[in-house]
Length: 395
Image (tube, rainbow, N blue to C red):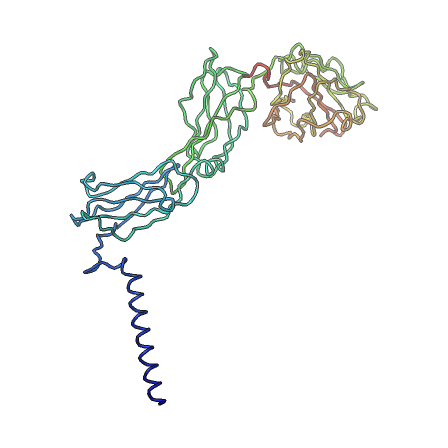
């Protein structure tokens, strides 16, 4: 009896397995082709070039004449392009895909024969560069822009990462915009703008290309913060100085008369008891009306041209503002506000240039001398040359 039951169990199990296998065959039947599947040749030797918002894909045209066409897929197969191999007689397929974003894309090439059998996909992942990449590239900045005769001398900061060139445009003597013929290369940072109109702002734009890229991309034009500076005629300005800080006929008004001469200079007091009093302050009123003030970018100080020991100016602090500066202020640091320029001068040269990367506008100027290289406290300034532009006239 037990043997019959065991035999029946074996027969039942076998029947179940046979029925189950038959069911699995039915499931996979639609994926099975009688006689096997014919795969056309797969795309080979795929390469690419990265460009600005685009890529260029290249691969070899199939040697098998049965392969007639291909489809290029990207963006998770949501986008595609049909390719007829008959259009590529030289044996090399080149396809450009543009209007891409700054992100990774996977491209698949699937070949088809005349019976629409398809090959296995040839896959490649590529990252084009675009606006996000360009925005991350730093533009040059203007160090100085100043007239030199009829031309403008422009100094820029050094080229930044992946920068290949910088171009300029500016207004000429007629007020017309012109493009500078010279392109600033990465290894240089100075350029001349021939026949530039003084006091006017200029524009510049740099081009970038990554080491792996094929496209050079220009940034939008950047307008300079300042106009092109020029030497300002200061002969009609009014200059006063701290009380009792004049020696003989060497009055402070002579520092802006345009003459570098021992007879036309300001020398501080040489009288015992007043010569060594600090600070010594020059207070200047340019007399400009509201809206017509100068923005100052540079000053040139002239001292004794021959004798090093008579170049007395040591530290200086300069202020630009819209209210007069008291030449007798004791606590100038509090009364005058934030300095425009400050530093220490060397006695090595008879002239000293002090400049700012961005100009400061105002009617009034204060120059504070808190000390001197002279043990007697002397200050001897032969001439002061101001440079700048008028912001209201710079565009």
